Image (cartoon, rainbow, N blue to C red; front, side, top):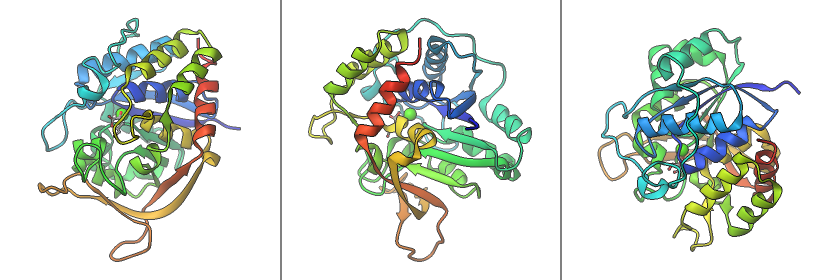
Length: 309
Ligand code: BDR
Ligand code: CA
């Protein structure tokens, strides 16, 4: 097995932290760089959190800061879900310093140096950094193997009735990424809502390892309130679904779809318009993750996090 060269763009974020640890612990991925965007909380905090998460893992992966606001809209965070510091109040040891430069420049440089169809990009936050990459150098889409995004919803949103948080935060950037011409896979709320973290998963993670990363991950899981959407049964592991697809695709079923995003200023702003039935006017441009084997997903997350220090 050759590990997939991968760049992760994220906004940690409680579920981003779990997703990052899953990626860093997985030999299927060769994580070359972590880039950071403002999202769940402001960029200053998401960047500090990404550095801390990477630092705790013991991996030497550069962490690069990027956009602190969407291309056009107004920045709004989700501290009401992730806590003021973005990690549910958990304070991690400070990580290594951020690498020099800006996320979009760093991603473009990595893509320019990559062979055709070779680099996997995993987007776990608002698509601003990735949108800037393809808006400014569209030919780089040729060097992408796959763009996996946690974004959007076929059904109802989680910020507005129409829109999921990442899509709503920067719809213009997301539309640039969706139409860049690279293969796109979407982990939308429809599948991530199935990956519901329940108290039994926290117990299993604590039993699997007392390492610093597993303990921090369990503390983060404990910090997140069960969602109303799940009937207070648990909270959704959105971002780790995108990473799990790149690591263990057999856990998912999927369908080819046409996907765009509503960039209007009306009540549909940020809604991903996803057609899985070949209706007009568009041909498929994305793969939609439909169902996840939730037991297999949590077994994977727990087993991998237990490998970390
Ligand atoms: C997405 O929004 C953020 O709050 C989460 O980190 C995830 O990326 C879910 O809608
Ligand atoms: Ca996120």
